Image (cartoon, rainbow, N blue to C red; front, side):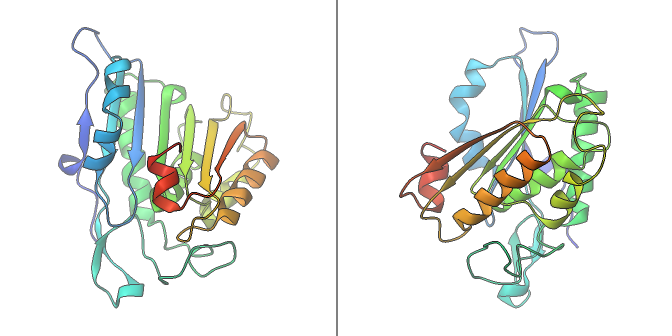
Length: 228
């Protein structure tokens, strides 16, 4: 299985006028995409937040079951080319977010804490589509404590993320739970709107602080690259 390689990520270091980063944002792109497009999308915020260290992760090149083993940049293995809705094969799959990806991302967070000196509670993890699913699992299973924030743009909660919410330590015992933003287009035909609604329900049931924004009438890309 291909692995994420640190040199392939897009890293935007905090401004040289500050001695060190006071916060960090780790972002995961969607399936078949790369980190460059999102680094470009966030250029304005990067200038407005000079003390923030940005890491735009690049997915490994993995064989995809839906495409007869052809390799795509992705955070795991898609089994079907259909819309990912609650109860579908990929929604219930442990393979849609690879364990190796989660472990590699946790090492990135470890480096931000140990090398950059950013407290775990000042690290924000977010992503789009499959990247949002991976971001949720990365944030909710991080063993060094709660991250500060989670953003899910047109994504869903994969099985291990859902399981993490049921653990006794999920909320309240390791600092405040991450503030969470979930956005989803109501006309999304790639990741069903029901998957976003269910993510909000499960997160809130676990005691998470969740802000939910529905982009009415928007599809998958329109809502994420627009208001989302």
